[in-house]
Image (cartoon, rainbow, N blue to C red):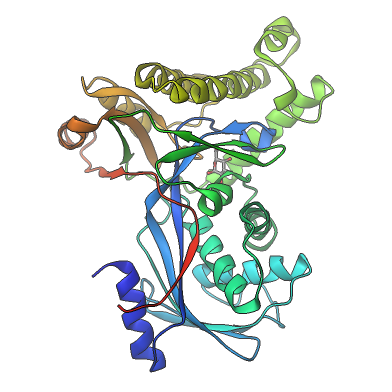
Length: 384
Ligand code: GLA
């Protein structure tokens, strides 16, 4: 049974009738442009074929009643009583979206819903952004609000920053809201312009979960953000987006070494991401792969957000003949890497990486071959 069918069937069982609508929002993988979003820079994520689904029907009152299939738990709240922290984390994301939509001046109505997802939690594939964007579509439907992906993404980021307390950038929600089938999205994180860029022909995107997790990611992430802000202040510009690689090299000796290396990563990564858009438009998988490899080296050596498992899995991937390039993806310190691979050899690549990683790390990775999908959508329930 597909997840769509699962939420519809469960809804019928719990609420005694069919849902009126089904909302879906995908997770994401970032091909290149890492730790650039909060520097007003460029990112190139794509929406993946794993998503969060909500089957729902509107209510006439302000109550939201949701059953989570994954947690086997019901959460209930009124959009008129916004109190943080009373619910499990998954429900706090839904409540936080209700809060940020109302902060934006929108009037919300409640709904009954059933939620389920197959974006692995905590793996760096943005399961939380997927919950937020699915919830935004659900509230949008019941409250008669036109869907505007960038506006929804901003509300999702506000939820993450101010309701959940994670200081993340705008990438994850933007791609979950605005993804385009068969394309990655070049996102300009300052102006929030979204440009679809096709994946090179005859390639597959392979996500490799190291199955390692970093619990302190929040604090390390914030330290990186502060170091980037220090560098931007040095140049007297609003963000590192406004600095180019030559400018960084020119002042190398004046900057604290760690700040120099953080800034160098960000400005070279912005340049690589723009170059990636050009080579993708030219259908050049080889050049895109080389840019991905360079991105990994920069994240490993200068930005220092990899861990041993990520370095090992990327090294294994890069050594496979079918692989154009590979790098860590997402926040880092654990979680997933991504590889660009010859389409016809994707399955063999996945088996080879699994075997070699098991040998070297005594751990089994989770490997997902993903197409690029559309962003958050709603579709009327026709039949399960
Ligand atoms: C996390 C954050 C994003 C982005 C990446 C790093 O996924 O949620 O906003 O900063 O890390 O590129």
